Amino acid sequence: MRIDVQLLHISLTPEIISEKRVVVIDVLRATSVIAQAISQGALEIVPVSTVEEAFQIVKKFPLGTTILGGEKDTRRIEGFDMGNSPREYVSEKIKGKRIILRTTNGTQAFHRVSSGKEVMAGSFLNLGAIAEKCVKGVEDLFIFPSGDEGLFSLEDAVCGGKLIDQILKKRIGPIQLSDASHAAHLLFKRFEKDVVEAFRLSRHGQKLIRLGLGEDLSYCGQSDLFSMVPIFKEGAIRTR
Image (cartoon, rainbow, N blue to C red; front, side, top):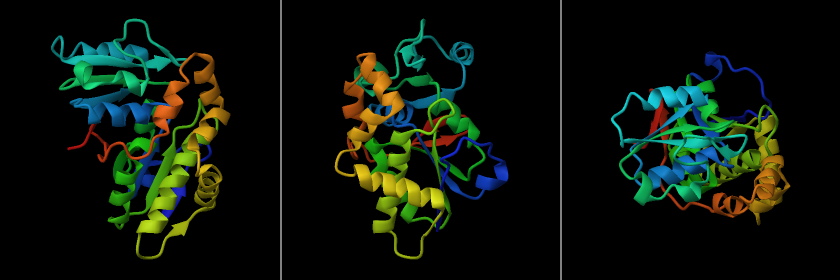
């Protein structure tokens, strides 16, 4: 198995990932929201790139079956039902419902890697389940941190590094790491005892703190609350 990590914001061609498993990571906060929402009984998550697209898609479904969630510039979008804090997505509000999700970085990332052989949503909340699935496969792995508006994202790289660490510990057989994978792994080892420290140091983590959303950092830094692997397929994220 070869593991690579996309640390630089460069264009991807379908050929690069068409035969690889891909893990999209947006710890703060899209993939954490996805893991949380599915664990609480959401029917599916439909990631979209723009606010306008979200408002158009929601019209296609019967009234009361679909929720608009996400953020623009970190804040809840006017006219949306929910924001982008995983703590909002509880079963009483979302069980059995479809969620149209729009975020600045994470939801767009899924469409950028849609040509992957299998595209998964990874966060600290479900990383153990992702690692278990990866070690059982024979495909190469491509870890895709969503980044921060085109910039390198410390928290996403650390999460990718933890995934690499778990695969190295679990997998029997040779594993080849790219230079970027080595870098992500080293970053994780630096923050292994307290990944939330990396969140607090990151540009986006500091912005969340300034906006009074610091509790999301601690929530998103929890390990393996959930044991599901959300899969992006045919425009939606589900576990089945």
